[in-house]
Length: 349
Image 1 (cartoon, rainbow, N blue to C red):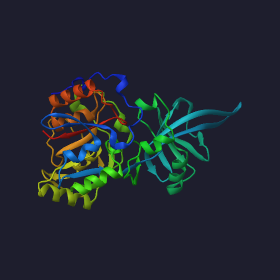
Image 2 (cartoon, one colour; image 1 turned 60 degrees about the vertical axis):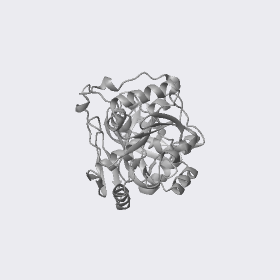
Image 3 (cartoon, helix red, strand yellow; image 1 turned 120 degrees about the vertical axis):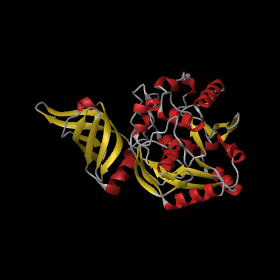
Image 4 (cartoon, rainbow, N blue to C red; image 1 turned 90 degrees about the vertical axis):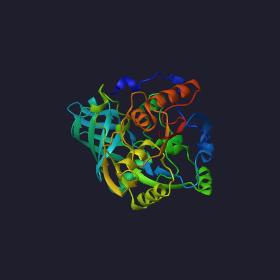
């Protein structure tokens, strides 16, 4: 039985990447199969073979961080306060659940103005507020796209504000389906040139959608990891993706999701070992040591936070002791960690 402390490790702060490497495929890549090999993402074709299948998450990140001012009429006149909002879940065409900072300055009925966009607080629960905007649907999406900033992870946002460069850096080259408030960061290492080389090799690819939520950054708060309740995220495995995954497995090819989001989704959609079906809905699958994988033969992923569910997922895939060795090697050899960090290619034990 594993406890939360089993997934802890000491990480030098200097190894936390605040910017990605450019070009994208120039990032380093640790490859772990029978042994640990140091490579770069540009070397990926050397470790794959014709008939393998990469599964990408095509979700598109919303610039969900909005800076505005709260306006409130009081007996002493108009009150104005600066408010920062992070959109976390869309409820309807004009309504979002959000995290506000500082939330103590807000109460029901307050209006927050974000340049030409206004929102009214209709629900408040601690730091979580529900906002109804004065625009809806595509008009609201366009307004957010214009005025919002990328919702960088807390460990980056605490060091520097998001800027124009992040609008490109924090989005994958195949992002098409708007809805995420965090990036599927393993896919950030791919560019069109690398995709073309993989295709020429005979490595195929397909796309699924999992709209990554803010819950991906929530800490595990229980010592017994079996008691942890995962956050829920919306996803879809279209019939085209299910078909090519099944054909790949039937032909003896390897199915390698790029990122833990893609892995969690295809395992959710599995109907038995070696077979997947089209699927759509909310998934809260929690993959930890002891889980029996049905679809994924490997995983391409970044280096994760201590005590995170992502560390538990990787341990389930390749073995707990192997993960300890890999992370010790990565730290000793100066790999860059977390969302803007380096990559790893891991094959199932």
